[in-house]
Length: 549
RNA sequence: GCGCCUGUAGCUCAGCAGGACAGAGCAACUGCCUUCUAAGCAGUAGGUUGGGGGUUCGAGUCCCUCCAGGCGCGCCA
Image (cartoon, rainbow, N blue to C red):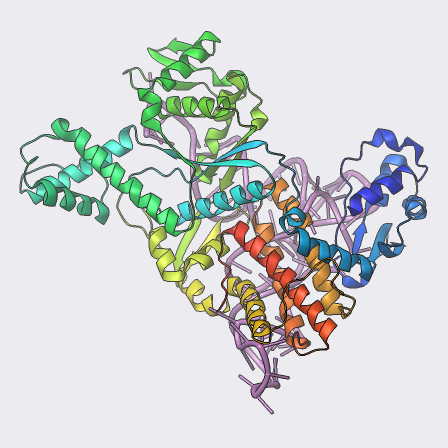
């Protein structure tokens, strides 16, 4: 909006060589200090270099070309060449009314235009419960999905289930060994087996249901039953934990199916037809180096077994062939080394590699009172996502994950989190929402109407606190679009804290009810807008907006 | 050894696409509840942005280098 006006101004500012500059993005920002203006742009300074002209004269030319007195109360050149704008209160009121009447149309600029995007996240092995790191991926993935969905994309959320291969077999074998112990038949526990309590639980379940039925069997005789029983149980536990964490998926893609329905074989054959697959040392290789990877990768081992990478190839080829405009994978940072080979697959399959985006989420260091909690899935020593969520709460957990950039390591200290929980930032935001709700309840009791329209008189909103609040609200779409562009939901989190940080002082200083009628109505409508935006932002983060606290 | 990520206030973290005097929460200190929720508000204090070079009118942000931490570098999954 503002950027459009600027663009037109620049175009008509007789800066003739402008056409070739290809200005697809005009930087508009809110100044760090209120005193400087409501919005500003460094565009004159940026143009100075390209046009080889003095930034001040460029700024003058742009300013002279801006004719929008109904929007700008002032347009000034400042500092090293910034152009600072001050907005007309009447413009602010008009925008606020638009926000109120248009709601999501105002808050969710449609940049996706129905394009299809698929986001795959969590995809934890069904060999044990989710830990906190998975929770971080889940919170991020869900929020990114919400972000894109709000931006007008058609979004599919997928969980890739690694139900084939060695790990689920080891799980089944571990459960089998525990089962044998329950039937007092000797059995070696598998090397590298899973030691968690949940393995015993599964063994006991099976023993309770089937008694000693399998006690004389060797693992080979009953492996299918034990493997299936165990991983399916784990998978449904994972589903439940995610659901309790507020994270839902549209699709669960089984790795097994990729083998059984021939997808893996077909994908490899297709690559072979294109000449990207060859045999050497009695193994089958994918020519990843032809597409930028540092070495070729084995697809079928010399013993005839497929590698994990084989099904990964099939999985990604399948995904990209399903016609998505973009694929997003959210991976733990420990998998970053796999990015080049997956990119190579996308390219080899004849697609633009830029259709794939991998978001890496760094490790979560779990601490208790400053002491790191050692975690080892194999040894069964770890704190699960479920435990953390039940101890510190879902909203806090999600909010903490989403107040950090994904690519920075995160310290999660249970004691600190709990200690701070009464003063947790998430409550600060939620409290603003609850307070507004409470005022509305009071208003209803006094039979004050709570519906507003384009004609509501807002001119009473004239204090600095009120004007700042309005500006913050109507600038939400800017933050939103930046969050979408960068795939960084934490920008929403910080925005919400800032919004709440403007609301509370306002609430504290002024009265909403009990003022002269039109002022009271105006303030109620302002609150309604704050409520709308809080709800919108919290919704994207997957954090609840409680009516009462 | 090579690659990726990180290093910002005592602690946990932001810093928006290279722009103005580097911000927030917690912790510390001073005040504020008979008025719509004090999970709140007003205020004080706290920094050589890991070190050093470079590019630029301008660098926390880009490049090089060094230091520190994390994670990867299999015919493992």
